[in-house]
Length: 120
Image (tube, rainbow, N blue to C red; front, side, top):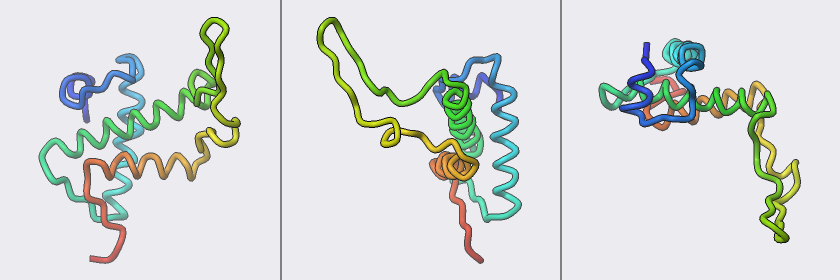
């Protein structure tokens, strides 16, 4: 189990509130256990697994925020009489499908772990 102290002081995370950490960490750790069952997972150093769990927890947190409508891509901004727009909603949409979430979690884990999908 990766505690919030590790997340904030070693990983230097700040996106996830302490109250939300336990649930997100559990989901991320479950996914890492799944990877270890079906792939060859190697941690290059002793903190790599904890760092991967933190990265996956942040990915899950970001998806949760987007699904709830509390976050997303900026479509337009204005300051005083000056405004600008940044593409269409379709062009800046984040894939929150199950497949999109799986890709985001895998990418987050691969930042810190060596994951081999092949036969070794």
